Image (cartoon, rainbow, N blue to C red; front, side, top):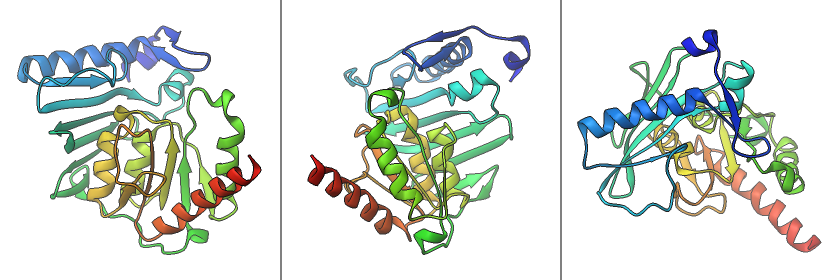
Length: 248
């Protein structure tokens, strides 16, 4: 938050994929704390590691130091830091902090999800047409605009409204908080979703792959919902994919 006032350097990792000094500073800080407290643990983070790194420990910290970098770089106050601890490949605790709203989302497997200490619950809406959804687009969106827009249009025609905030971690937390009924996105990375998926699930929601498969943070796609509209969301995805297959 302080660097928003003093300024920061912005570089490009791709055509529209940005990284700021703040991303790197936050990651170095988090890595240093983990190395000091848990030197035997593995770390997987956005800026300085690869999802293909071999495991050396049953404990792995998965984090995005600044989720919503494009928003941050443009002065749009929708961004967060996201951190999860995986044990034997499964997230057991997670935290997502939004410093602009001072909102700390936390979860522990089997113990529920919380916002600033108050228990979270997903919404009770049962109809897709009465639901507010959210999605996101990958950084190579220019190469696959058609497929992404087709899916977006299909949900737009079935739901009350669709938003696009620019932070997958917050999207998942907002499903857990009942602010959204559902979220879908393709081309994700583990650090985008490890903490948020646990928070949404512990708040009473459901998280699967977009094909209905068991959620896998390495699978790069997911649907998260309040559970009540989950099958309807999966049906939309199936309809779009059937239509695309017939066209092809």
